[in-house]
Length: 375
Image (cartoon, rainbow, N blue to C red):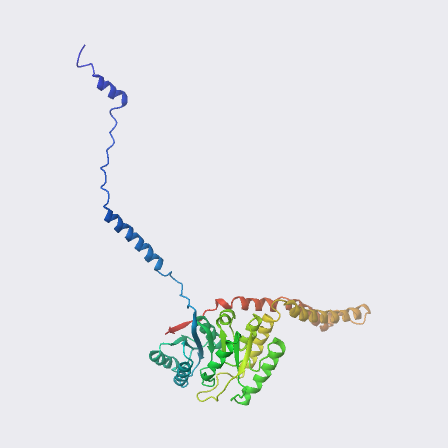
């Protein structure tokens, strides 16, 4: 047999099994990490996870923490630069006598004088005094709403910045709160204001007592004490600061009042003009509608709608009877248009007013106030 042409058995076996295929390369075994390297890697991963957990989420503002032993004092301010230094000293003196922890939150409602500059100096002297400044004047209700949001205390005191409210009354308000009440309003029994302010106030208090069901001598006194639950529940918007006791009572909170000292204005002038009467009336109607008739709105709107629809129907019925007797032509009677208008207004009263008040009440939480500085 020719050795050149005859293949060996091994060669035949390789040809049958496909010896032309490339052999797979073997991977070199990776060296195992040492125990200390593994522990370092695990510790690095755990540190990264912990740092990611500790990192605050973007866009979220930290909420003020509640302090059971803290007293919060909220002071709305508008152009009261002369009163602020003396007011701060009076509050410090009173709180030194009462003892315990406290914070004072000044809300500068877009003052055009140096009120915020005075707040800065007070803050540098005593860090328990804080300040928030609005870019423009938003009103007392907006200032109180921001103050209530920032307050961390279990009891919140509100007072005006014009030195007419006496800080010495703070201990009496706290004492009454501890008797089991949720809101204690001051009663300026001996009020030191001109007749142009006292007479409209008496009339407003009479109307509020008559229609709201909450009997207070002075609903609009700036000196009040609240439990934390009240300020976090009651929605203050528009000009609703005058009616906070009514809003709180409608939510089921226990409200009362105590007589407080009231001083005459020493600096500046009153920030409220004749326009507050119209605003107060409109806000009073809003409070009545959203508290007394909120759960049964048709008792109010249905009554008004029925009155208009009935009046319009009677007018048109009268014209219809005359038309049947050939005594008049409806085409030349403006009274027909008046009757139809009454019926249309009656139908609209069932819907328009209720929808408007519901929109205002439900969107009050989304109101944003532009703040330029914070201490």
